[in-house]
Image (cartoon, rainbow, N blue to C red; front, side, top):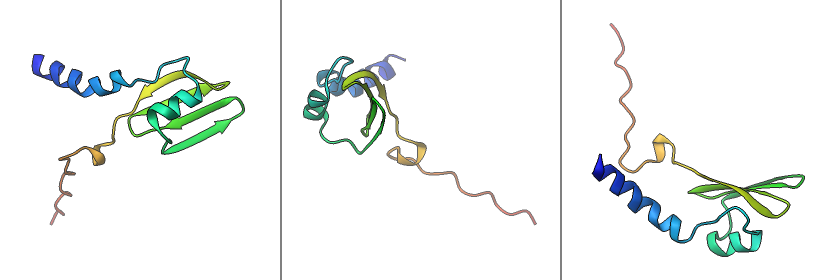
Length: 88
């Protein structure tokens, strides 16, 4: 259990050092994270998608920062299970 906790802390450390926080403005986010992979805008709400986080902004201010995890096909070392053998 302790090695897993240590590994999680090591993985989270870089994001904690350069973290986008609620209250940050768009200029600060772009300076810290760069251009997003994708963005959506509806009214006063803007969602910025990065490989590691989803940032939701309202009225130009960050309101939520949600970590994103890669899907099973994008995990390093992941191999999908072999297809089932046909029955005869």
